[in-house]
Amino acid sequence: MTQHDANHTDEIDRLVNDWGQLLQEQPHTRMSRASKGRIGRVLKFLGLPYRTDRDITFLNQTPSGHRWLHCILDSDPHSVPAVRGAPQFSSLANGKYHVFCLWEDSRPDRIFGNREIKRTAQDGRNAVIVLYLRSSLTGAERQDLRRESCELDATAAVIDDVLLAYTATHRNDRFKVLMETALPFSAANPYNAETLGWGARVAPEMFYGREALSRELAARDGTSLVFGGRQLGKTALLRHVEESVADPNLRRFAWFIDLKEMGYVPDADTSKDPFEIYQTLHAQFKRENILGRDATGGTLEQMRQDLINAFSVDGDLQVLAMFDESDAFLESDWLAGSAAVESLRALMDSTSNRFKAVFAGLHNVQRFANRPNNPFPNLGFNPNHPRRGGIGPLADHEARNLVEEPSHLLGFRFEPLVVDKILSYTNRHPSLIQFFCHELIRSYRDSNPDGDPPYVIGIEDVDRVYRTSSIREGIKRRFEETFKLDPRYHVIALTMILDQARPTESWSLEKLRSHCQSYCPMTFDPNRLDDLELTSLLNELIGLGVLAEDGTSYRIRSSLIAQLFGSEDEVMSRLFELEADEPY
Image (cartoon, rainbow, N blue to C red):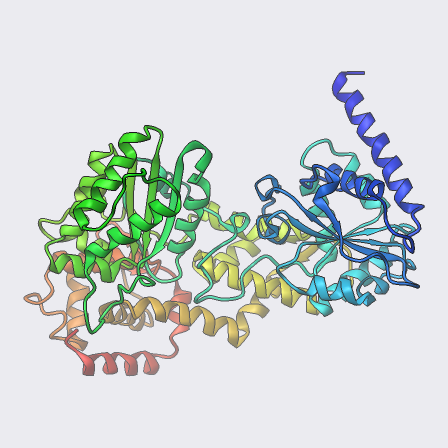
């Protein structure tokens, strides 16, 4: 026997002893420090970040006549295991777990019949673990547990001796094994139900794709620009980079700064001074205790010098400042000669890019980069690769992973071609995949309350979800939000959609201009919108996932996009409305 085998055997022996002692506990008495240790060691064996019995606090001492207790495991959030598809038990737990020890009757309805367990498990912010210290649950009882959990929308990982024994057969990734065996019998649904307004912070376990762009933004010599349509994941990307880069112990700082919250609002009555961005940076440096004792602040030049001095004194210091919703700021700064952006670029140069600024926004960011005499080439924009920094639909393998991995953790499997159908309906947009898969899991559970995992999803399940009005309206609303970025997007897309009713080849630039001019002659007049600008608009629509490129020609990316906007008469009616509103 190797030392590794011996250590594993010792672990199992301690687990059996601790579980056996817990089975014999008398919960009507005050629980001892030894009880804390036993509970903690069982949780640690399962992969949870238990260190000492001081991490566990009993919230109740078992009410008279009942045989259960509620305790909290509160430990280092940085040591919480990350499991794809289980954010509620990983990052969202933030090191805090509600642990219930239950000695009640073996009937599974008694688990959620316990009002404290039910109340805690129905709060989606809580990670709830139930140590079921009775006889093993039967297959039928696990079905009852799943049905009860879904009906109440109460998520808990229920652990009996069978699940514990199965987990013990694995030496590595036990917490993932625990999630894979417990969550299929719960109401867990990690996908987000919203298409709009949900992306402010995506849990790391549900963030998929964007690896190359993430590396670019984190790298000192990588691009400083991120642009794309609404709800394509810019904010989620910045938050992901923030969490992956920041490590104060290594003197690495990453900050997400919302410029809209600072008052840079499009079409505001009064423009905000772009240089006020230095006040925000200076305050952030001060909050992190990065500035030296002699830092005075005050004038713009004094604040800028304070920042430079911080890097001169601390050779390990690195700061990544990511400015979201930067369109209004950039517009205001452009009118002032881009002086603030130039100043930040100079700050980057003076610190050898140990300070780095990133600007994220809608496609206006890309347009600023195309203007003459702009500072963006020095911020990583390459006019020969105009979509560098652009954020659009996920790559095929990334979108598949987002569909499959979290679903697999919950016990779901897919028949052939089902995932392709989901990606076709959602156009590989991350927010739409989340929205669609959330409803797909909910709908399947409602339609199939019984059964054991794996739960197999077929084409008919996907089509049933797509036919629901809320799904189709949600997807349509997502594209309408994209078109609101620029009315010309809408004219181009609707013109091409209208023509799709008649089979045709892809659209050349000349043909597209001619057809768009027939509806909006002033807006698409070559003297007002030249070929370079029109090509830029088409590139933006490609990045937004509305169009695809065939060499030098263009087409609607998917016929499903066309179907969302109704009949030919409805499309024509909308085009006439856009014509009445021009020029843009």
